[in-house]
Length: 203
Image 1 (tube, rainbow, N blue to C red):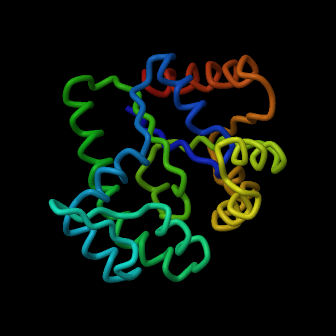
Image 2 (image 1 turned 90 degrees about the vertical axis):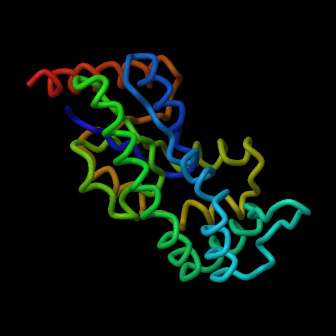
């Protein structure tokens, strides 16, 4: 059965689209949740502190944890450190993706599985998926959405510049969802793609 990678750039509505696919009947997973789990592992915490500096640690009497805000500030201002962090996290993410897919398909061989992965192309994950969906919108909408989430304009632009241009991602996609309009418009696109994916599933 096809396993789908869903991606796009910051503020373009990936999570909204993922929820629409879930309502349609797909098994859906947000990779950010996997990363959150990975960042709680002691060995990962040690590697990150060694690479980015001990100031990214939050110390308590019982455990060490990662200050995500400090990490974000570092990696979105230093591309080399961002790549270093990705080398620590990406192999573990891929391991979880493979295990999750295998577990679901054992229970339901006809399952349609979709993983939301912001850095899918940047991490070289495209080869692990049967089809790729890219969610896009215009820059003004993306910036507006990020600001509403609490990012400053400077932070929003830095995060978008840190990713592959959305025009390039669209060219690499099997399906493109344009998320510039209302939820009904986006939902129609999701349902159309879902029907196409179901046909692939039945082959």
